[in-house]
Image (cartoon, rainbow, N blue to C red; front, side, top):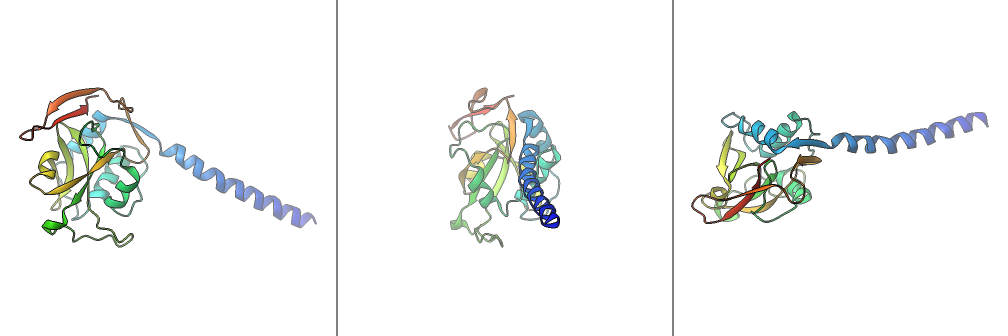
Length: 193
């Protein structure tokens, strides 16, 4: 009887420990960053080499370097499905992830995710003034969002916050400055903190 009681206590304690570990991990995953920290980090990566088809890995590595918990999503499409908060090209806060779909009409759908079976599509980080830092052709580049949607023939899917990262000062209504994207006539609003 003593043996069984001891075994039951061990089992109950194990269950309690298993329940506490995820809660602790969630608390550890929250990371406050300023839009300036995020933009500076990603702008400083422009021109560096990366493996082909590594847009999500590049973004996840960047946020991990800034102290956030690394994303474990299988592809940019899958990640966007759980992180998009707006499908509008307006009000994109600096530091937000930007999700784009390669347009099938232009043959850009060659990368299929081996895990979820979806086309992987694309992700970058909005760094302000209409620009997104992302990867292409094995390099980190900075491109106007209007150009990605225009001459690159990508479909804007939306934007969202990276994992459990909180961009300080952005809140639900970020401090904003209004400007017009070059050659588009689109007025965009962005966080300037």
